[in-house]
Length: 358
Image (cartoon, rainbow, N blue to C red; front, side, top):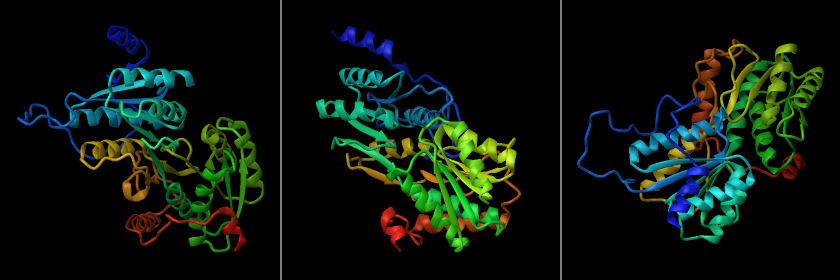
């Protein structure tokens, strides 16, 4: 039976001998011992196995960053890392069941796609492993769910929007996936950030209704531009490329989401809101091996290094837009520091109904 399970794992799991790929921060939370160094003490993760279960990684920076962090943390802590890439929803559950059978110590779901499977497997096998889920939430109490204060990064993008526009227009646009509760955090932060600079601001929001419709996103962005928007925030997932294309054609300014989407070939993308999955995996594993790990859910933001904006909290090799001066960046860094220290507290925010009720 054990051999059969091992064979099944060999078929469904991609062992994480993957080399580091995709973008990541220049600094890691903690350095592994330099080559040639020896230690008489055993590493805390020796003999342990930790797996990341996620969608097909490919070139998705959101996922490659998780893989990078997992492999680097394995060097620091000494555990055996595994990446189980899943082609469809059934594969998520199959892989997690196989990992439980192979007695993995920690199973990490990488993204909302892993949610249903980890909720089911953790409920059925509550004592078989530790479970964590990044960027989503489930009902199982034994799954540590990591979510984010996206409103903090959106606030920074709002400030960037107002500084970029510099009074040229008081109408600001945004193209989002949908109008759900998750979108409200982004919209709230964006509006508050803009209004901190431009109190006369007005907003136009449109929704693509899909995670992968660049054509629709482009159409909506052009409509907003024709309504006078000089800056249009894009949070349309796979549709962002349509907004960026429209920006380059029409000459309005824009920003991306989740990962660094600035582009030296498109100077109209002035920043990108960051959801740092590289830092997220490091935070999770530092906690796991730090003696203070619990199944309690965590909500991370600027202060944990997981939320931010390009050129403000996260650097890039891509050149900065001429619309953002050194003084602008210094101001933005101060705003980020105010968020980090709690001087600017965006943790508790009103519902959409409360906000527009006055």
